[in-house]
Length: 338
Image (cartoon, rainbow, N blue to C red; front, top):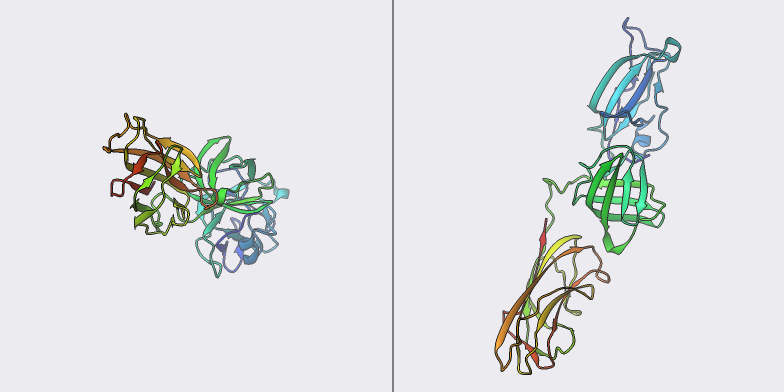
């Protein structure tokens, strides 16, 4: 069973029910479901069990001779169904749906994750499913998730989700890690990307070329930059690369100003993702005789976290005589986008 950041007793100090004659509802049965579904949702005999998701009550809970039972619920919306004793036929006598029964009694240090109470299953190294229910509203694009697998705990961001019998969730996993077939538990963040109460710092990076650079007969990385803006300290000056602190989508713009004193040949600014060219824009003709040209290339990058496996660099392909200018016309800009 999933853990819960909150637990609440269904009835204080104990759950108790009476029949229509005002007598204790001995042997009555309390069946609990996830709100608006026919999917059973567990209750627990103690606060500690409800927080940890261990030792669930039988479902239905059978009330004792006093019409009472210890019933603790988790942070979820429930549907409560009271039924007659089995010996009396077990007919339903009361139903209450969409009951927010666990809005108080927090544990001493509440978690920032909401445990998924429905069954979960592995699909692939970047996807999982929630079985039998439509929870796409919870697993929307941009929401953070925590997944327990055989190899340990994985954190990621929802790329998209869809429902057809089961809810399938595709995620971008931090640090280039993967899911495995031992997937056993899923949680999603309390704070949602949609109308969040907390807005994470946004990337707004900008750097210009520091000094000229010559010799681009092969695709060569642009080095020596002067950083103008880097509020999240994401620039790796030693390697002349930008490394994200947060997974997400980023708009990368590389504007390059260059000259070429050699033979006419196209000059091509390039954007590289983890060493591989992902976008480029060749000039229509070479800048010869010392004439200066400028070309701009863009790329929308879907980044995970991890300096060794995910970073942005600027390259140029031209001739041995191509020179990148020492001006503000050579600029690398990266901004985060929703």
